[in-house]
Image 1: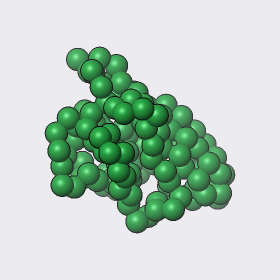
Image 2: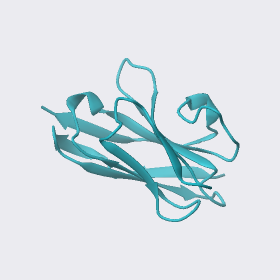
Image 3: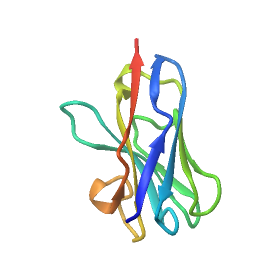
Image 4: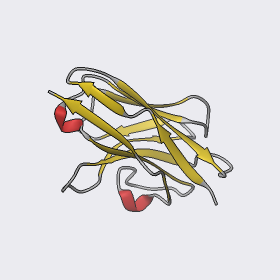
Length: 125
């Protein structure tokens, strides 16, 4: 059964940077849409950024616009999330998600079929 595998989380100070990676094990390719979500303790899961593999068009949550960049090194390949100017509010478990279907809301969790186990990002002030 296919799955997604995240890496790159860690602990940084505010203003620092991290780069997350999302690969696949057992899936033919990453999917038409791939997204990063995050969930902090006691909060709902939030869509952070998504990329459409066909055109590489991207969508960002307002809270990360201008600070985070989602990218894909080749069509339907590994997806990255470059995070800069990190803030304590960015502290959360970050999850990669993918779907082979289309979606009109690429930052909605219900749009996605495949999920990774998550990687922790902690930002200290």
